[in-house]
Every structure is written in structure tokens, then in C-alpha cells.
Image (tube, rainbow, N blue to C red; front, side, top):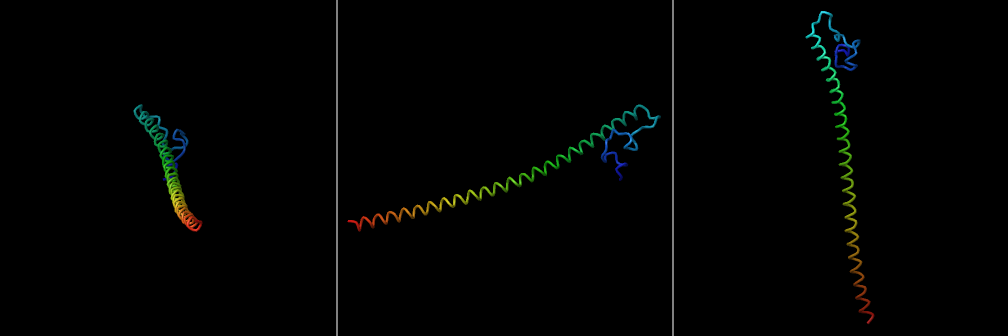
Length: 114
């Protein structure tokens, strides 16, 4: 269906030159004119809602992408924290070993010094 044949395919719905069936014939009664006006307003609403829908879809995609980035950053940060905790545990272990060695040296010095 060509854009000219579809009253919902872009353009301003209120523009009489854009759509083939926007004008009613002179012999249309008041009821037909009223229905035509209601129809045109509904077409405008459909176009507006379609644009709003597209904006919402784009916003959801952006938010999902952002969520993926945040989740990735959270995983990376947790890995850094885990690595730092492991490093601290290793330093504590080395500190304990150094303290034991110092105590051994102190005991040997006391034993040989007396």
C-alpha cells in the first residue's frame, strides 16, 4: 500500500492535500460529517499513539542496554573486590609467616645470647 493510499502512513492527517478521502462530498449529511470528523480525530490519535509507541520501544531498548552495562560493571567491580580480598588474605598470611619467623629468630637469639 502506497503512503498516499494509507491515511496513517506519515504526513499531517489534517492536511487536505495529503489524503485522497479527507473531503466529504457536498451532499454528505450532518451525521456523515460528524462521523468523518470523529474518524479524522481517531486517525490523528492513532498516528500520535504510534509515534509514542516507537519512542517507548526506543526508550526500552536504551534502558535494556543500560541495564546490561550496569550488570557488566557490577560483575567487574565484584571481581575487583574479590581480587582485593584475596590479596589482603595473602598479605595476612605472609604477615603471619613473618611473625612466626621473627618469633623463631627471637627464640634462637635468646637461646644463643644467654
